[in-house]
Image 1 (cartoon, rainbow, N blue to C red):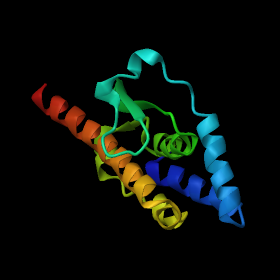
Image 2 (image 1 turned 45 degrees about the vertical axis):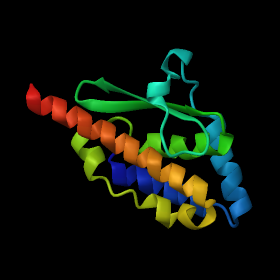
Image 3 (image 1 turned 90 degrees about the vertical axis):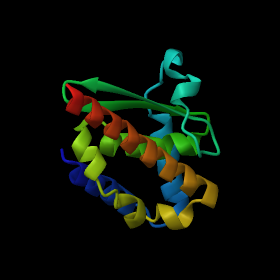
Image 4 (image 1 turned 180 degrees about the vertical axis):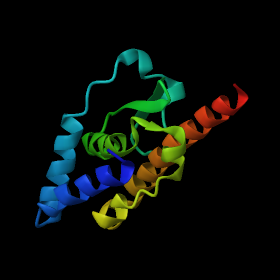
Length: 142
């Protein structure tokens, strides 16, 4: 699926809920279902700067696609990062770099998260795009 198709899926999922209490519960459930990240990847180098809670993000290549592993100590943050993984993981670096992550605004996250959580979400997106840029730079050198 394309990045935009995956975003549309998330938007549709959020439309199933009438209020933000249900949406928060859904985000928490997403966090609970995030696959466990191996401790070997929970290093200082993989911590995302700018997040209130500790968030680890580990990229790896599979062919020409970037995949991400992530984890956090905060369950709501695990849910947020799981949505980013769903949308961006498994795509080419160029696709990630060019992605307009409109689902964040469409589902109302920007207006319903505390400022520190919003900043953390932006930091997660930025780091994922930075990894994509780094992989693109490596491809150009080969």
